[in-house]
Amino acid sequence: MIAAEVDLGTSTLIGATTLLLLFVAGTRLLYIVPTVLLGFAVLGVGIWKMPERAGRFLAFLYPEKYVADAYQAEQGLIALGSGGVEGLGLGNGRQKMLYLPFAHTDFIFPVMGEELGLRCTLAVVAIFLTFILAGSYIALKARDRFGLILGIGITFLIGLQAVINIGVTTAVLPNKGMPMPFVSYGGTNLVFCLIGVGILVNIYRQGINEREEKRTLSTLSAYTKKGRRIIRL
Image (cartoon, rainbow, N blue to C red; front, side, top):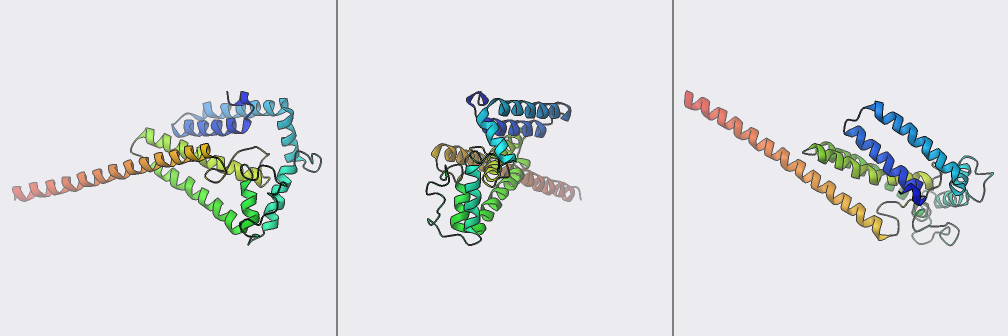
């Protein structure tokens, strides 16, 4: 249904997260690998049948031949290069002045690089990597199987979205309009990302409580065994 809305990027994000959940849940690779190959085939056909998507993909491969379709990506790279290491200063960016389309949503990352420099962009990348690692750790320490699958799903649904956004804005991936979680303008994405973080915190608290309960029970069991030995003596 999402692909029918001509939103292949979000469809790919949800599909990749679903396959990851199937892998974590224990699905055999015999079923996952053919599904991945079929997904790539369907995605390729979809890109080929949609002239706009095909133009973006060809512009990614041959930017010098498809200048019009590669315009946004090139302007993003100019913004990142203009900022350098230190940046031009907050609010002093030039590319957002009608040069870089969607500078406040999909291409907010190059604006950050232009105004705040390489240090800020590397910090953002480090924060998202930390989020993925922390979310994965929370999921692995969940008290049950449902918490594990839910935690992994939330973590990578947000993390992969950030990876795709950074990859697109740095011309590592084909151009696809996808906002950066917690950063891009817009309230809906922010609200649902915060809801996901809240669920992760709940999974973490339940895992901590379960470990404390097990530790308490083991301590009581040890004292009980020790008391029985004393009584026997």
